[in-house]
Image 1 (tube, chains in turn cyan, green, orange, red):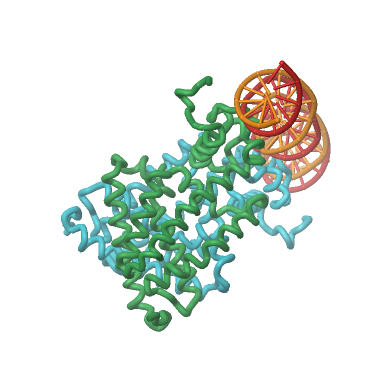
Image 2 (cartoon, rainbow over the protein chains, first blue to last red; image 1 turned 60 degrees about the horizontal axis):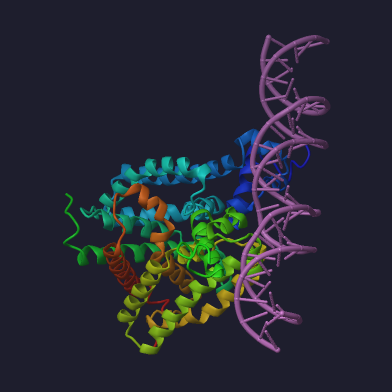
Length: 215
Length: 215
DNA sequence: AATTTTTTTAAACAATCGTTTGTTTTAAAA
DNA sequence: TTTTAAAACAAACGATTGTTTAAAAAAATT
């Protein structure tokens, strides 16, 4: 019953949140299990007990993020929105997830470029699960392309555009003297939506020869 | 005179390249000095001898990348290019740097979101050096904005857009069956240029109330 | 109330971490 | 040839890494 006020959540959840916070700040490899345990106010052994090791914590964090992304795709897909609306909804929903689960998103994104042996299978599996979503997304935006190369450029460009704020967050806070609040994230979502929509339209008219028609 | 054929470069350079390759793959914190030493074919102590420690290797890698970026800014600035040309030149030059110094760029970009104590001063210094460049760049693109928030959105968006390919490179290679060669990078530069230019123009017309006129 | 299961703990595990040490080798300068 | 400095080395440093163990506490079940 100790620390109920400070740590109302269950140990498992506390480990996950403490881990996410530290991973977001320093990166997965730079964080020790003892650091997580102390921040979560649990014994070190609890991490292996609940997550079968340090890697298990990161895996769950990444899975939770991808579940949110999948939910957004499902939502848009089921609503059968038009191209522009679909794009704006996608950006808005994703920014909303980012806003509410900032550290989970940041961890999932920033750890993606790395290739540690203990995650290679896991990441391949996650990637496999989302390939179809990305394809459907591009199709929805009437950007289905015969040339695979253009797809492989556009999809990562869109994602990293939406997440640019989080990739550069420490940098942004140092350089610009701004208050990051709900109003800021509204402007952020609008700006990114516009940039992406107009930019993709520009690509459509510039690369007509590479872009196949979809009904 | 041993291993001249295999390792023609000086030890210092070999350490730097081996370090960059490993950091790019696994992230700074996940790489040990012994790993670097073995890959560079030098004794472990040589890393501290030449770079005053593991952190020194990363610092030099990041500095080299930022020197390249600074050179691009200088080039564009001295040529007094028009808005559209300036943007396309910037993207082309940056993609060119990325193409030729892939691992150095990837390391500099992927390590940016993290905040390890041994680098906090260093990163603040690097950031300070480049604030003015970013401001000048936005001004050149006739996107000088009274509202600081819009600047803080656009600048990171542009950078992460250009580097999206490298952030998702392991992912891309898994998902799409494409050959990444010079031709690919040509298409990449063109696509990103178009996306960015048309996207920024969209922002200009959508946020007229926030964007100040510059002569 | 007795038993079983789950949760939590402190301690220890072997392995690896980055760095420093003192010495040897190599090369240049005198 | 002698001297001096730079480069490279093996070995060891103390500290920390992730994980496991076996015992204790707490909770749930019978």
